[in-house]
Length: 338
Image (cartoon, rainbow, N blue to C red; front, side):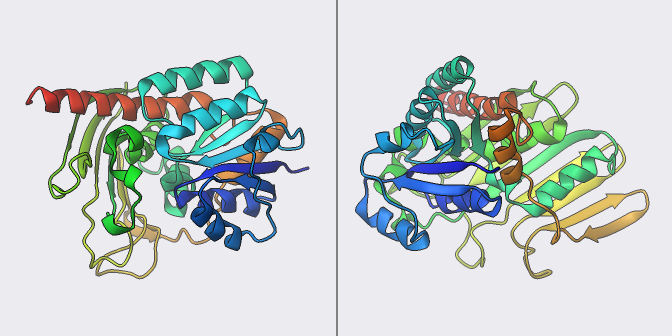
């Protein structure tokens, strides 16, 4: 038995991937709500058999709908999620799930009260085969005990195509919240811990003076009981790169390393999901093309069985807590001239 889901808020293109995750896993798409006619037209073209619902209350109050999916404007996602949980619906949100520590606190309280599932779709992990395979290798002890991660998340800005809210700090949440939440989640996952803290963080606008509220580069130093992590993200991907960003992850263990070139191997091999394992036996590439992506099926099973197999609830929140804490630290230090 599968589940039925609905969408509320389609302001980021990540919504297409979120819906595809569920459809691939056998869920039924019951309907969507969007107030923007232009966005709704493009979305309906992609999903022609799915009704657009003018009043979102119809979706929230429909007892046959199990899960609400949202990629609303970033500062509105927490409100959508809390409304859904108060109606007894589980939630899959695009990242960032919220844009302030206050919103995080509210979400945690509502989730604890309702016992609904609140999941953030960290796609740079859940939808990247090389990341999933790297997790399997680390769990198998392929590089010994993990001691450090380096996560790099460069993105292409494409400023002319972005909506106004994308450049408003209060709406998008800051670059560490908007992008680095991916890397924070991966640090927790690979270090296999929910105990971590931000040791240092910074943000800046280095190349976009025409958009003064945009932060186009950011860094975080993370610390856990048995591992450390470094994160660097930016909006500086050059136009010459044929993909939106050269996302990379470096995992260092006591007996080896794993390097991921997630989306491209510049001037190297074609395709995506390049995984390079170095251990005592040598250096080898590992094919990730047949890796199963478990997040969608696991989330559907969690909704049905009330389990936590797709992602632990505590880790989902902790990843956003790290990103939000780092953002606040970086902006405080910047305002004090550090």
